[in-house]
Amino acid sequence: MDKVVNNKRSRERTEALAKPSREEAEAAVRTLIRWAGDDPDREGLRATPSRVARAYEEWFSGYKDEPQEYLKRTFEETGGYDEVVVLRDIRFESFCEHHMAPIIGRVHIGYLPRNRVVGISKLARLVEVYARRLQIQEKLTAEVASCIDAVLKPHGVAVVAEATHQCMTTRGIHKPGVSMVTSRMLGVFRDHAETRQEFLAAIGMRGAHVVSGS
Ligand SMILES: [Zn+2]
Image (cartoon, rainbow, N blue to C red):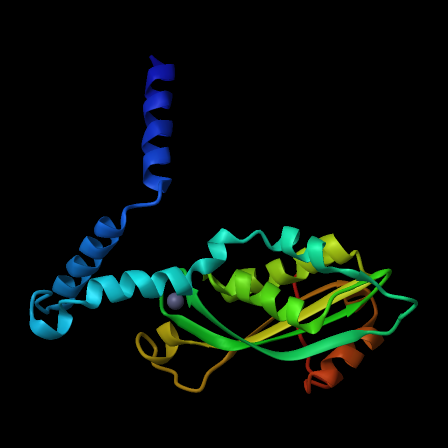
């Protein structure tokens, strides 16, 4: 009996996770338009559901990619380089998973290579893959750090993200101009205050007391 119930549950879950059809997605947008209080059949809104569905393909394209696999394909040997590499001001656009409202900001990445390095554009691309998913900023920050850590196996990784959340600035507590800063420090950036300060100085946050999870 239990087994039957379990099978039914797992089938329901599989169905829930299966990608809906384009028609289903557009019907959902129509429903939200009506929920907002408008008429999805009026002239200006008629093509909106299909535009939104297409926009979603772009905004959420990050689900198609496996970031670790991507990074594995692109790293190179360092050739003896053993200083901290810092890449700052990588702009990103994401969507908060609580309100599906835009999160717009910048990510700064530092790492101390052991044997492997990657090109600048690859790190920017890595951020983009994670950003193009429903996210919370803390998770995005941690995911970027652990992906670099897992693939490049450096002596340490530091990731700081600063972003404004439109669910905070345009609704709810209405705090325009407020940005959130999150960080993840691993290895030498976590263990050595000096290395951490070197990174924070490089990204213009010298002396900042960044509290980080590990
Ligand atoms: Zn939100």
